Length: 284
Image 1 (cartoon, rainbow, N blue to C red):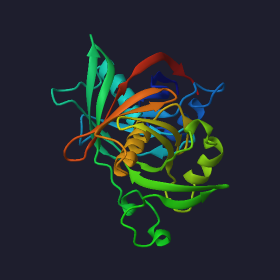
Image 2 (image 1 turned 90 degrees about the horizontal axis):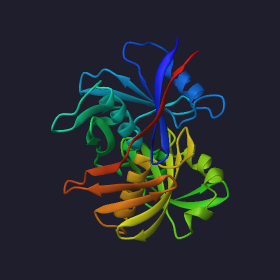
Image 3 (image 1 turned 90 degrees about the vertical axis):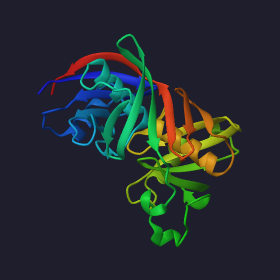
Image 4 (image 1 turned 45 degrees about the horizontal axis):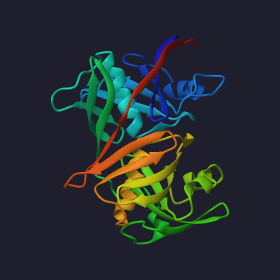
């Protein structure tokens, strides 16, 4: 079966968008094949369009290893551009509502003519409750939050802060320059650490100022990525929980800059670009 697709990126975090409405197939296997460099299209995964009974449209996210993720902050912006530009679903004055595995999210697009070029996404209120991340609390005891919790990952001793923003994250705020940290070597140990029954995304962070941080991101099921919306949200939220940043933060990533802010209720918002690169047809 041939599949029409679009390749998009958000600050270097690239996804393949596919309209999967009414199509029954193994989307995880397709993501695994299409995400390969050289042999496939090359991407950080697939964002899949499906019908929703609880929102205007439903997004499913598949990683390059074929596993399904609950949520992607960059992915939902690219997904929204795909459906808005093609008029599959159109925003109202209150934005576009999207069902995800991490709950219903609202996206407010920035338009140039009839094309979406950027968006702001309501990411929900980050949770630090271990059971909601989830973290195996049989190993951590009765801790109310996992904040600067010591673990060993490979030959590195780390102090992690854990939270969920629709998907699980472990963040290390460090003095060592993130450019010097062996993320590709240490990332797999953190991702698959025994504390995390569903594996975890891993971020390392330098705080530059009250309004700016530098982050590198190792995504569960994908490896190191040039940027990540949920990873940026988690990085900024962890720094905020430590009292190191204010209520609006620019996150500097290898692929660009994303902005994270919070409202009075504690809900996080993600802002950044959305770019379509090309379209094509995948033939099995």
